[in-house]
Image (cartoon, rainbow, N blue to C red; front, top):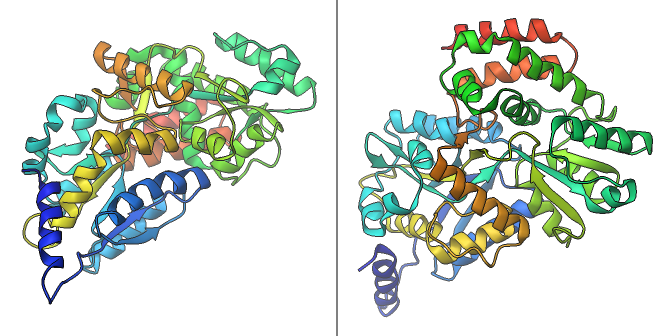
Length: 415
């Protein structure tokens, strides 16, 4: 009997007694606060509500989760950890090392998680052989989002190369449009750099630089070329980009004020929330030069220890998250793809189906790479140090040669 079924039967039995006690609520800390993200989260809330489990919402605004992790640290330090927390990559590993996360191995074994979740995701979902989090989805970060009407009006075909991309943005700029919608926040700058670096140097370069932290590669001419390309892209961003939230940049593309946005596939949730149709109102394609690779992050819910063992509510939440029905329903709204590789994705839209096939193919071929920008390539201290260099360069504080030197130094200091 599954834990989910056990919980349901237990709830039924309790309801028959004169002293019925409601199931405990789950308090969930997350940063899904935009329109598309909130709509996706409601899928999970409704699932729990249907099984008499309350949801105490603890949203902390801020794409990338940095603010949420600050709040979490304060909560745990005060001895009042939430039930479950949305986390990314090395943040999960760090909390697991502290012994703060509940052991989900019994549930994972019962549900055969090892067989359906790729090893690249298990790197973060498991610690010392134990499952400590439940992957909700897989976002890939190397996407371009485009206004289809503008592409058609300007005679732009889907760019296949860096040169094609620049030519397309030149057309938009000449037409008086913003060529590249962007929000000037460090994690957004790094998201662009993720794709640019992969396209410039290829997967072996990307792994050596951002996963292996090879100082020779970090200081190479190829890295300088990646920074040079970032400087080129800066010329296509509007003057008001500083501090703009990512979903406001997405809205510029949705409204026809901008041609492209370079952003992870959570951006698709904003298009869908605005009733836009992929292939008709907007186009989605891999950043030119990264068509065979997928750089990813995976939103996961880590269950924080609430005493002895895993609570019934935590077990239900974890099982619900990885159920095939939920994986499809949630990712259909969120813009991401399921974390499981064994599902029928025909219910997903065209971009979702493409993303799911790309994800499975990249996993099978060894081309699935954790995103540096989103905490899946190196620990937080190194990631944040790289952020500082990348965003300083993007804002004109460093030229490309200096940025390369600063990147090497940042890694040396924070290793």
